[in-house]
Image (cartoon, rainbow, N blue to C red; front, top):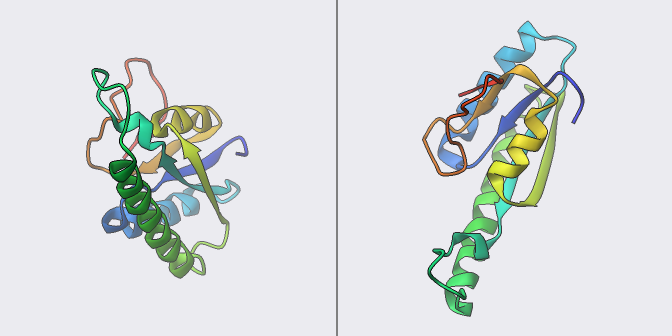
Length: 133
């Protein structure tokens, strides 16, 4: 990620278009800033409760299928909007969403767009940092 980039975190297809719209608006205010669009495929093992020791194969496959479907839908939304935001670059990776967002946000511009619904991946920060919508 380039320093001063606009970071757009896509987690849900129903909010992706709005997040990309916000990024396009931010891009007008920051004409030199590249736009990094991020989707993190969570590791199914990270979804189990601490009291559980293993994730059975069937639920693991269900989670992987659901996340793959979500990633495909998000990519299609990104591709459809890409002409309106040509500076945007798609990044998809596997990992822990909160860790990946935290790592990439260090180099982001002061404005970031993310799914506006609260999830365990996007907790309030106790230290000052970039705003997250």
